[in-house]
Length: 156
Image (tube, rainbow, N blue to C red; front, side, top):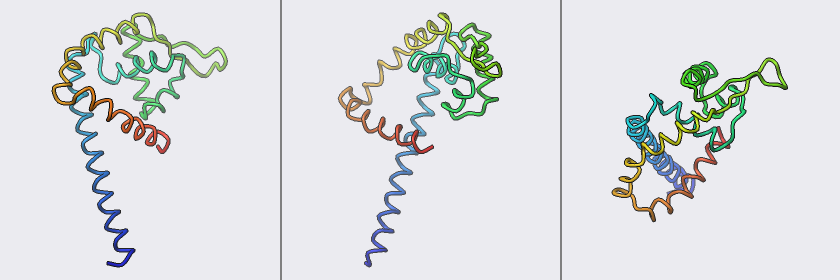
């Protein structure tokens, strides 16, 4: 087999492997989101929880536009999520003191508590995962998944 054909065959196999990887990640994402949504308290949706979690992990005070970009959703979609969180008392949306045309999003204490309540509610679900994947396997998988996530983030 000529070298070029060999490379093409390798690329096709690599493409199939990448598809299989992304397919598994997609299915896992769907199944885990659905399982998580079933246990979320306070009428939270997974998208709303993600906003609260982001605020705790990354700090708050971000603009809605920056948050929408981080979550890769339209500003309109994100505005709807923010309005629902604000109605629940979980976020405060305030004018940006440096730019009167912009706003900043801050978690409230109730929002921080709702995030913690969600993690507690998900505890029994999380406790069952080692039935399928051992802690050692999870520790081995995480660096690779984190590397893939970082690469995808850098190349969006």
